Image 1 (cartoon, rainbow, N blue to C red):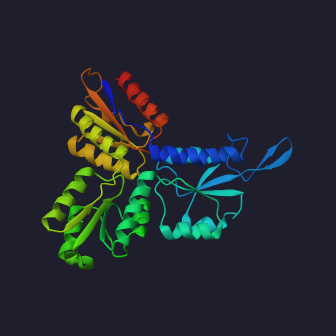
Image 2 (tube, rainbow, N blue to C red):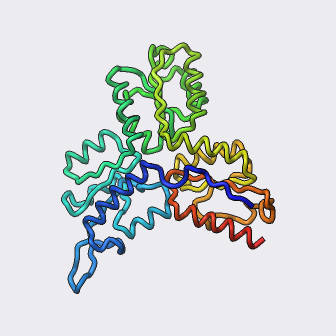
Image 3 (cartoon, one colour):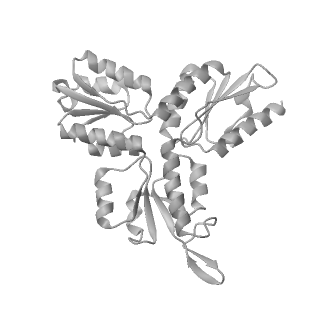
Amino acid sequence: MKILLAKQYGLCFGVKRALKLAKMKAKLLNDNFFGITEKCTKKNNKIKKTYLVYTLGPIIHNPQAVEFLKTRYIVPIDENKIEILDKNKNSFLVIRSHGITKNLENRLVKSGYSLIDATCPFVKKAQNIANELKKKSIFSIIIGDEKHPEVIGIKSYANKKSLIINTLDELKEKFDKNFFNLRKQKKIGVLCQTTQNLEKLKKIISFLKKQKFELEIYNTICSATLQRQEEAKKISKEANVVLVIGGKNSSNTNKLFEICKKVNKNTFHIEQDSDIRDSMLNGCKNNSDAKVGIVTGTSTPSLIIRKVINEVRRLENNG
């Protein structure tokens, strides 16, 4: 049995950057960086203040990684609970790679919180494009999951009457109902969630072009996502079985799973090595020609990937 690991695997640039900023701040504040998350620790018979770095929601869409980071003083907190934080140097608040809404950021700055902006540059680009379209009074269509924090953030920079759609069918339905007077728009700006499926973007643009709209099209899908989607298709065609590794709450991992599943029905979405079942590898064990493809989301740490590969090998050896 052969293992086909995608060339692009592990954490993407945006997630690595967010983690680096949070870890640097936590390490700078706590000389005993490797410890447990408590407000006070005892050192040399003295009570030492522990400084926590909070993140607005999980900094990485991987439950195992989030739990590990808590032991490094990096703790997720819900938006509706940030008022409990000290508005001083004892606590820092990280804006994760997904970004936040314009109003929330303004509120946090005015309230005096110590902010660390770890918004992914690709997400910032999408926010800036939405803002520019608003300045030019151009109606915007944002392609993405309306409940995803990144999309909610991008929408806050756009025209109030901008439209969020996740599928071509959703757009057709809005068009038929003339939502926001859509049919009468002279010019439409199109942008998307950075982890969107490129094929979906192409289909939506093709539909809009047929309606004779004047379009301003911005492909705001990040380069890492595009590369992983292309590799996912290739591996799915070659492999007998495909394992897609990533958090169930990870948008880009779910998109990769959809792409792989469409090409290869023997595709499984797992978060860690303990999720692998012997039955997933049916037809691969004791078969030197069989291939197991491994594709990973942009929030999947290398350690988890290595453990998955080791578990696949273990199951192979157990016959």
